[in-house]
Length: 253
Image 1 (cartoon, helix red, strand yellow):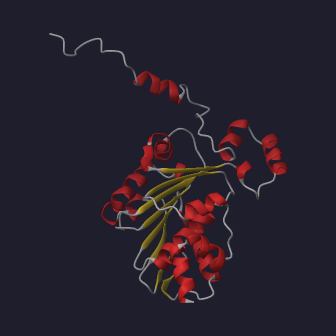
Image 2 (image 1 turned 90 degrees about the vertical axis):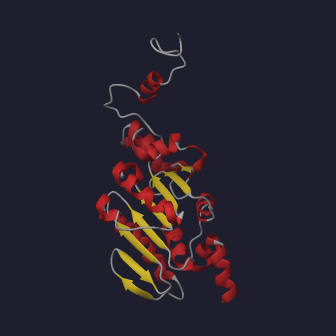
């Protein structure tokens, strides 16, 4: 058992398969084995991003004693749903870890690790420090103020930050990190067509039932312009970026 536990500690994919009975898709296995600090998951609805994050959160809490895992979302209900995924996986374990604290929104393991779900409230988030893993669910709809409050918490712990969502326009920190975050971020994009559990028949029905804009966003993972916007994002940026010399000023004598 000690050998098996060591394998699970070193390989979250083996932990998912053998301990939880969860066979990850190739992209999910990549997330579970990811070793970076900043990750963006741009995934269509029902592709399994929350399940993957739940496994990763539980693995962190189990095998990194005294770790703090924070689950953040636009609402307390949504954070609670993600926490229930973690709790559900915990219940599958043959040897369920002993909990010294346990409620609907948080738990503390005997090894000192904590998993806490939080609403999208800046004041609430500021009460925590040095998390080892922060998972921001539906990140495209989380306020930029909350995101700004989260990042300083990672300074001392050098913790990991995961943003996961479907797109919601070309705006906010989620879009900016995806488009302008540079190589500091690992990016993963999974459309509905790439998910083996979503049938072509269902997607064809969805195409007929909703506007193309909404389908391309929800199922195609496309960052699209606000349909009510007067100016396109790319046009605005083009006006701000120019190689032309200024009309006035400069270094001329």
